[in-house]
Length: 423
Ligand code: KE4
Image 1 (tube, helix red, strand yellow):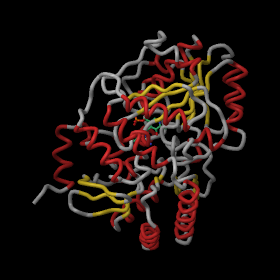
Image 2 (image 1 turned 90 degrees about the vertical axis):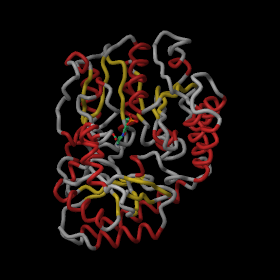
Image 3 (image 1 turned 180 degrees about the horizontal axis):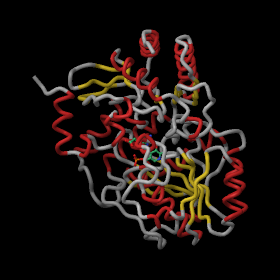
Image 4 (image 1 turned 120 degrees about the horizontal axis):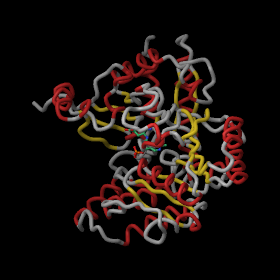
C-alpha cells in the first residue's frame, strides 16, 4: 500500500524544512496537515490516497487552462525529447518573447527568468540602475517574492507567518524600502514629498492577490502613474498573478495603464518554472549584455518551459475571458449568499477568474481591512470543504483561482459542500 500523506509528511519533515518546499503548502494557518498530491487533471487534483478534489488553488495561479492540458503536456513531452536544456539561445525563447510582447503593449523587450522572485528582484535592480536611485515603494499586503528588499511586509504566506521582518535580511537591505497601504495615494504622495529625488520605483500588484483579492480603487493606478511621471520614478506592475489572467493583456490592458516595467510568471510557463521582466527598449537595453545591469540564469528560457508557455498562450489568445469572468462571479456570489445565510460575517472580492471570501463584515480594500477577517472561520470553512472534496487555498490571504477547465458541475458540487459547512 503506497504511503499516505501523513506518513509522507512525517518523513518529509526530516529532510525538507517543514516538510514542504514552500511554506504555504504546510497548511499551518488552517490547522491541517498537507495532502501529498499524486496527479492533477483539468479542474481536479488527486492525493496519494486516491481522493480527487475540485481544485481552486490551481498551483497558486499557473494552471489557468487547468491541469495537464493535452496541448501543454504534448508540448512538454516533445521539447523534453529534443533536449531539456541547451544553455544556448533557441527559437522557442524568441517565439515566447514575441507572444508576450504582442499581448502586452507596454513592452518592447522581455527577459525570461525562472521564477516571479527573480523577475521582481531584477526589475527593481534595473529600475535602480536606470534611475541611479535606491528607494522603492511597495504596498503592505502585496507580495513580490522573497527577494530581500521586498520582505519588509509581504502579504502572501509571509503574512501568515506574521514576522514583521524575517531574520536574515540585513536592516540595510530594507532601509530603502518604503511602505504604503494599498489604495492609499495620499501616503504615496507623502513618500515622494519626503524623498523627491530618491525613489527609483513603485512596485505594485495592479490587482492584489496576496492579501486575498483586493482590486485597485478608482484612480489608484492612474495616480501611481502620475506620481511616477512627476518624480521620475519607474512604475513596475507585478503581474505574476494578473498577467494573462485578468485579461489576455493582463491588468495593464484591462485598466489601460502603461507601466514602465512589468513582471510576469506562473501562467507564462504553463506550470513549468518561468518568470519574466519586460518593458520599453529604453529601460531593457540597460540589461547585460547590451547594458551594464547584470542578471543571468542557467535555466532561463529553457526549451521545455518555453514550449509549454507557447502552447498555453496560443490557447489563451482565443479564450473567452469574459465568459469565465461571468461564471466565476456568479459562482462566488452564490457561495457568498450561502455563507451569509449561516449568520457569519462575510464579504466577497472577485475579479476575472479570481475571488476571495473574507470572513469579515468590513469591505476589504487593503491589508488592514483584510486582517479584520476571522481566521478561525476561514479554518473551519477550509477544513469542512476539504473533507467534502473541495480544495481551497491553505491561507485566507490568497485568491481562489478558477480555470477554463472548471465546469458548472464543479461549481454545483462546491456550492453543495458549502451548504453543509457548519460554523
Ligand atoms: P515565485 O517566486 O513564487 O514564482 O513568484 C513570487 C511572486 C511574485 N509576485 C506575485 C504577485 C506573487 O503572487 C508571487 C508568488 N505568489 C505566491 C502565492 N500567492 C506563490 C505561492 C508560494 O509562495 O508557494
